[in-house]
Image (cartoon, rainbow, N blue to C red; front, side):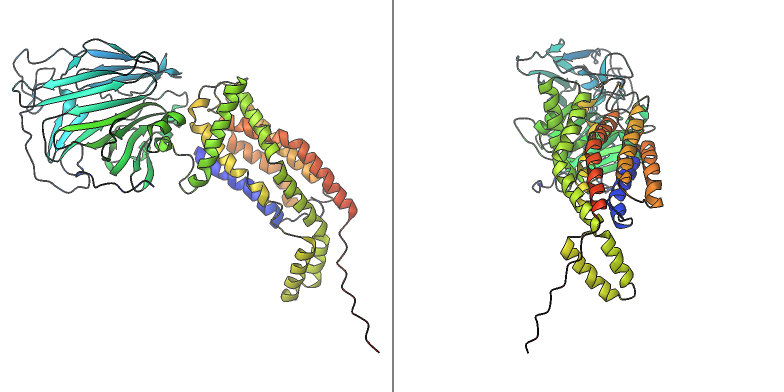
Length: 580
């Protein structure tokens, strides 16, 4: 069963307990972005047709196709004169955040290793490039029906050596240039790297071309770096921010045939559980035109090759930004265009509710971690206790409402028995009872539903938040992964049982259904939660343990109400004496 479905079942069960317990088994005794200009006509990466499938008349590119490194013409595959090629070499770029390898063949990125994040499946830092042969940021030019694959061209690199970007030293650039031997075609690409960000500014120049589109290759999905590669594959997806429609995300496992996410887009991306490769239009100094779309086609099991279509100006210039790094909320927000929503929290219909909670929760967790200098495990426990303290007034309100309902229950049963055959009279008497004693069947459970948006937000925070990745606590090697010993789901189920047991002890009698629920609910919750992130289980177990003293006190209050008996009926007003 998928993790998301387990979570939906868990939430439904917990909400059902709160609502149905009060309704079906009432206690017998105490108990937008602005519209964008139309973009250039969209074409598929192979140049055969536009992305919408409408055929276009063929137009021939100005030059004959240039030679490649292996001495063949990419159009005819015939050998070209010796000496026209340049030896392939790899340029290494090092910044405080990552190390990158770029081939001068096609200016393709062959490797991106993130220095601050370890890979759990290979030695060293987390790797983003899945297939070095395909790489990332390779480009193709489409002019109507003609295609030039620029990844086969061999470029000169300026400056010629490796590049190091030091903190405080300012940005540095590499320029890749190809010139056709006949002088009729060229392609120049300039990458600008920064010490404090994962964004690369890319500027390109081509000969003037009419209605040209540039396809930027993001490869067949990102490399896997987690121990649970099956779970990581389930979350692999490509996404885009539609200029007029919001965030759209599609799982790579569901790409069975070539498909298109049509523009205009504010960004297009390929993502894994914790990392993302994204393309945004323009550069830091120039916003640029929206992207034309995203093309995806099957590339093996649970993988899809993703290419982002950008526009080329009539003069041959283009520009874009590439974000190659972690799904770290603050950095993605700094990139703009809602890139932090690349891994959206929750389902679309719940995001407006969950989004504010996510921002507050992440801020609190990071603040406690940074200020108290403690592990995230202790931060989650402290956060759970703080949540119970903040929710105490709501719980008090719910408890008082439940006590009023319990006290009035005998009067309610009396009215139901007396007027069982008189529906109108029964309704009238029940309304009077509600007004006189403040009885409301839902008053005891509605305040308790408020914490559930927090729980839902935490589910997605623990599942996708890079800050919790690889964070150990006690016997837990990774708070973003399931408990390998399954002790936390057991503790969570035991604490839930204790909460219900204390509550039912304050009742004279318990419905058989409620008694069965007391035994079955913890077992069901353990079964559902055992594959969830251990951080979520730790938080939920800590909340339950912190609630035990409060539940014990509430049980005592219920006992007092039970011993006091039902409230007296409101006495009817005496009629004034008749005048003689």
